[in-house]
Image (cartoon, rainbow, N blue to C red; front, top):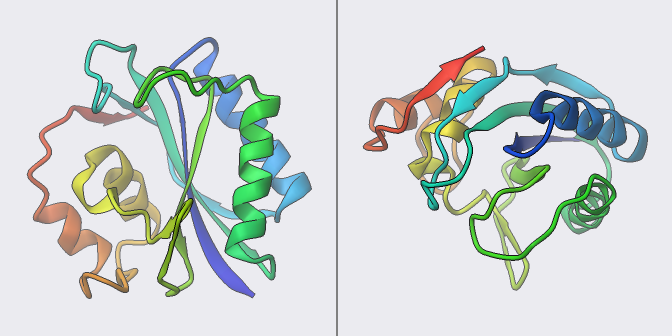
Length: 159
C-alpha cells in the first residue's frame, strides 16, 4: 500500500458540497480517506480575478497505480461538472495528485510530486496541517520547511 496525497479545490457553485462529493467518489472509487485537513479558503492563484477557492488535502492508502488514480480522478472531475476551458480557470472541482509515496514520476500527463506544490500556499497550508514532517522526494525538505520558506503571500485562511 502506498500513501497518496490529493489536493481538492473548488471555486464555483456550492464549493463545500463539491469537496464533500469528491471525497465520497474518491472513497467509493479509489480508497478510504485516512486523514483530511481542515478546509481552507484561498484567493484565486494564477488567474487572480476568479472567485475564491475552498481547498483541502486528503491522504489515502491504495495499491492502485498513479496512472489508474489519475484516470479515476479525471472521471470524478468530469462527473462533478469540471470544464477545462482555460488554464487556471474557475472549476466546480479540481483534484491534484500531490504525492504518490516517495515515487517520482515524469510522464507526459502525470508529474509526481506535483511540480508546483512547493510554490503554492493554498497547497502547503493544508498539507502542513496533516503531514508537516513528510519529506518531498525531490527537494529533500519536509513540508513544514518548504512552507516556512514560501514566498507566496496569497491569503489562505482555515475555515
